[in-house]
Length: 117
Image (cartoon, rainbow, N blue to C red; front, side, top):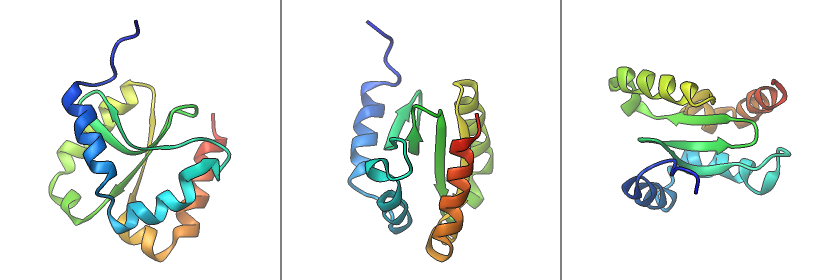
């Protein structure tokens, strides 16, 4: 049996977060869901002690949306990114206001990252 990618608490927290999407997460999810970019994304995907906002397993790409609270947790976000990168993932970060003001630009950046290997 393969090892679990997180703890039972991590799975529960991810399930809870899936029910509580922010407006920016909801808007981006409308574009990422149902393989609209040619690959499958998961939302609120638990990886180790962290939960990624959006994760494309096949391309090992994580998309994180940051609100104003992230201004106060830079060290935590950096440690999280380092951990996810050690697991083989690339991490893209966008501010919530980027999603609201320039969704097409954000989607273009995600598409470029998906094309890179």
